[in-house]
Amino acid sequence: MSHTQTSGTIQRPAASGAKDRKYLLNRNVRQTVPLRKSLVQALPGSENRAGPLREFVVNGDVRGLNAYLIAVAATGSANEDGWSTTLDSLVWAR
View 1 (cartoon, rainbow, N blue to C red):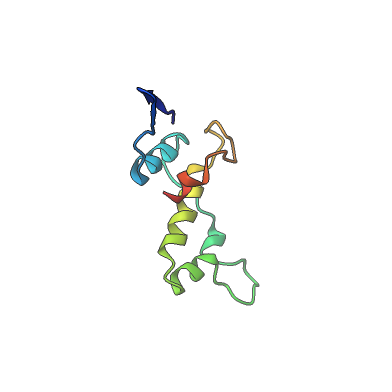
View 2 (cartoon, rainbow, N blue to C red):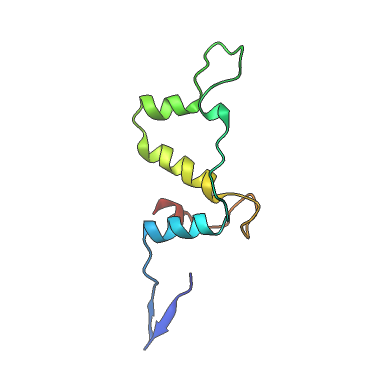
């Protein structure tokens, strides 16, 4: 996102969480979000078969779950950053 300058003042582009989510998802060019089975259930033979999803649910951590899901959905080899990101933390916070 670029800034525009008008008569000596810098105008920042209007940003929103919805616009940022749309951008993050569109840049990765996927039809679905790949979630590993291990998010839901631990490997056979584990003492506790619950996966990390259990912690989100038990703690009512909707914000944390949404953050995890958008990070998984927005990360992939198709985007310009590859399997990482150089986006500012404010983008993720929105």
